[in-house]
Image 1 (cartoon, rainbow, N blue to C red):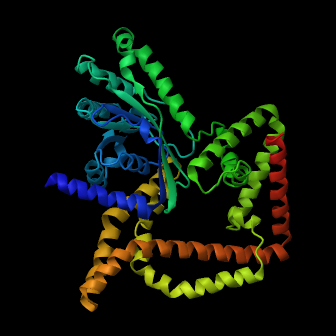
Image 2 (image 1 turned 90 degrees about the vertical axis):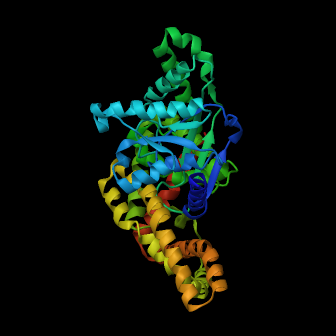
Image 3 (image 1 turned 45 degrees about the horizontal axis):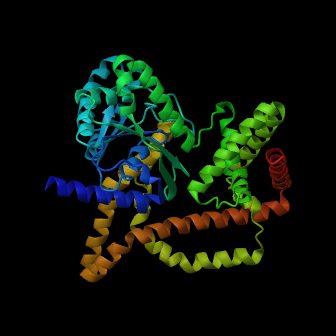
Length: 450
């Protein structure tokens, strides 16, 4: 009975994750995943707090994955219960949880080791904490110590494999964004068993370097942290045009990741070759960013040559679909805003804490708001209508929820276009920044392709 409940619960969460929360989920190079029954230790980058364990959990089909996550997220009882239900285990860190807490790691590491020896999959984030940017931090070697000590318990008769994994997001915080999980070729620890018996630390360093290099090769790692904000803004604005010049659809996350890596590498080269010129470009891009954020503009409006008739057509579409949107708001307006109080709290804390926003939104929605309000809709339909209509409405709720989300997004886009179309004709400031953006794009084109 317990196994059936777990299977149903996990598949329910998978639907919320893959259909409602994310627009697209990309799982790349699944052929690199070792065969079922082979002890596999997944090592992944960590950039999005609770979303990262969830992304891993739903990337291995029906295989159960035991995942280590930072122990402080287990302090909330309801959250801890949810995480344990998904085989997510606490990992304690000296700099956050204190030296005394490290004793608890032995218990959970031993448990994870047993799962490995029985042919299970265990996942861990070697950075030991989530980052708040597209960057790969330093790796702790504790995961390798656990792996080799686990192998030693079986007299090194079992080959434990390390599976380097990269996780990447189109947007850290927004629903209906895209997530990507990519697997590299696994590393067989059996190759190192003999050397480990005499020089364990040497082996840890060697394997750790291989794992980190493999993950670095797959992910977007912006190493120039001093200019991170400018580079990240460039890849999200100019980077769209750069992708198109490479014949890539920028709306496809795997392809956009590849062109972003090429673009960021080229920007690093240019900084080394022309530091003063790049410093000026970064400064000008940041000023452009400040203007767009202040005016609440999206970068794509600068490339839109909208005419009055097109705006009238968009307005007509919005008006015609308004009744359906109003209908779709029930109960989704409550579901969308239910996590707001908690997510605002994490946003105000800033830094790495803001990376909990997406995960908290997912947990609140999956465990509370969606099941409660969807059930409420079904009961109300049953009372006022009939069973058939109640079932049809219930089955259409996820589609209606997505429609409500995209209608709202379309409306915001329409209002932004109206504002930009109006201001570009009358505001010298808008004309200046439109021209400045064009000059910056032309300047980068010249530098990057010279």
